[in-house]
Length: 573
Image (cartoon, rainbow, N blue to C red):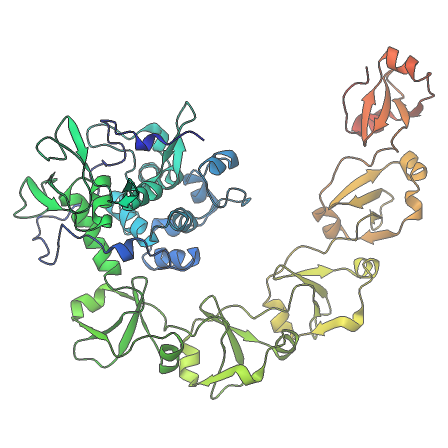
């Protein structure tokens, strides 16, 4: 792969500059807590574990009613995820997922794969295009914001580079017309954060001119952690802000952020403002409102009540409590109480129902599933019923994959596969040689609570037909292939088990090309002079010379439509 052009110190500063932020505070005083020399701690900047999973980023977006929380297919298309080959070239960790990812998944994958705290990208999405809290009046305005999501490759003095447009490319990077790779926001920020010279980490801030100004030309050097530089401000929105000011880059993260956005106001002040509003306190910090006894734990910008058991289990430090004002307390959204750790078994002191904590939700477990999963009642923790009731409920914990289940009144038999219950018809049940003795009986409510999937297919290498229809199909590799009378006899299809299935079951099985004659068979249609030889399941037309070389083998004459239906290969010369 070619070396990234990002490392060329070209005068364009494509990476270090940005479009003017879309969010501007209207003539308000500057927060006295703002320190332009230290925007975010280094430890926080590189903390990839803040959200844990993409699902928690999705939750963050949903709590704030962000447009990025949309998971509809139409919206995902707007994120402009590229083809697999491009994703491989950009070192995307999930190039072959087989579906479009949500905005939360793209944020998580791009940040964590490069060692960046996903919170940083969320703040930048708000700082640049108001994509967290903003609203958009048209599809065009939304698409424009998504295409310039974090202002990457968008200098102040010219429009955004076309190759950087698109939510995905803003985060992951892109290729130019010559095939050279350019980094995206996550990689470029972390490159500046980790930058070394001769094996010594120095960090990388904005480039400056001979007067140590970021806005002068020609540039003469790149700043490092600990350096000072004269930064310009985007006037407007704040009272008492000078056109320029000197900033000392107090840590690697601050240097990296100023390289990306060479402004104090509105750029990096807004970054600091959003970050401290949402993520001022690290996950696990315990806060308490002035004059109140209730304590909350901070979890990705939300405050959550927690019990003594959860505090002990999650090692929450309840002795080091931060007291906050009512105003600051209200800036944190209130989420559901913090649950026990995943894989914890709990029950209330009133109800006998047992739950398993998975993905921060409680999942009720029936006795048959409890036994099947070899769980132990000795590990069940009894908690106050009100505490158990306060935790968010998930789906019923399903039986293990491969289990055969049925209900009490509804006698449909299902196979558990990938967490789905797939119905099995009697004919397929018998053909697969399943045993009724292995059926797990559950309540009808439990069965209906398990997400449903498609019918279970017949076993491979059987013939199938639609009930009431004479047509025969060969089933293999998840496809049904029509069998003609000639092929039925020639290939002995009648000697294989036959499974008759219903219309719905029949329709859900994909239809492949007709089952061909045996390899080596010579065939022709009854309306054409072309002669074919079957090889590797394909019909290959014989030239006159090839037909002569084979000794003029006798061709089996078949209906022209049948011959035409078989997949074709190259001509035999």
